[in-house]
Image 1 (cartoon, rainbow, N blue to C red):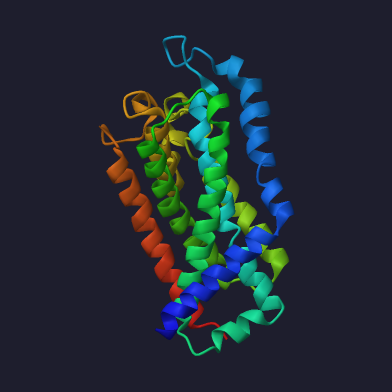
Image 2: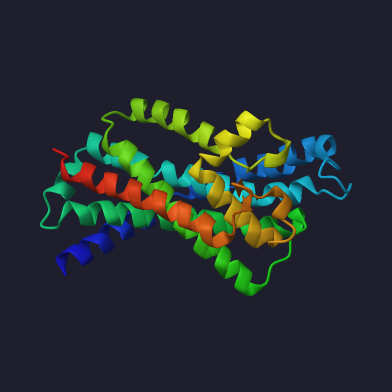
Length: 264
């Protein structure tokens, strides 16, 4: 019972800090707005029609990628709170509390995943601009996929943060991880337009499968088929996409929990 309460307290603390940080809430719209509205509109004309039928809507294609970008950046940056708490001594107090360190890691992961999912939900306000239509059921499925996706990425962020002692080092390492994960994914560009070696790199990126699952929900399986990921000539469906993401999350979560257990 103490461990479950510990998970809840850690989760609630992170959620409360996020809700009270109004600047963080407002700024969470800035980067998606720049990418979707300005960047997307700016390059849409250069890629329009390259899908083969002349009706390719680049902003519509990019919209699920922007949702994935928000989830990715928010999830991994959750590790900042771990480094911050370590520098100010709060983490040590939590680790010596009468709860297991596994509970602390799980609470942090759930807190970060919840925050990332909420910020992903905020992106639904851009649906009219992206010329996308979704049913209520599809919206709930999208939210569920965002949570699984964010939970896996948050676990990775916590594992990285648990091994780093300073805020400066964390920021450098995170940038080295974030941008390759984002740009080596089908978030911004259709995979069939990429060179063969770059397309292979995309398939080794776990973020690619999370974004592909989001795109299949937002655009529909048939409309997104030509933009999907193929392994051995087989188009990855949502179930297999999310299975890859979940497997990656289990591995990262296990590493994060083990790392928290050996913290001093």
